[in-house]
Image (cartoon, rainbow, N blue to C red):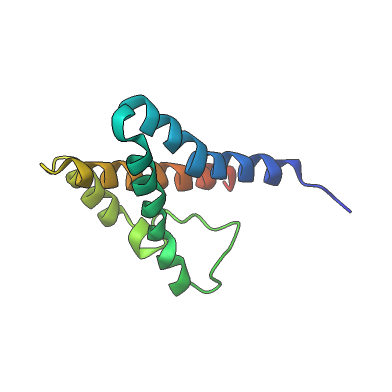
Length: 112
């Protein structure tokens, strides 16, 4: 049995970025409502539903950025524009989506 250390490190970083970093951001910047903000951050992971349209659905060597519709550069520009929305929760959604894109982009760097 061969253990691939790089895959273990990459997976740990990936899911740490998805679950651990957002809780720190929620607590640090949204102290009074960090639980609500963290839940919104977690909800933005629904953006991965676009993976269901790919064949295969999951490919560990595929870069999601630019491949999946909700991970496209057009979508990322839209997420950046949402940062300027007046509603603070829309801004939180935008932050969550952009954190997701950064997380998925770091996977692209591992697979070069």
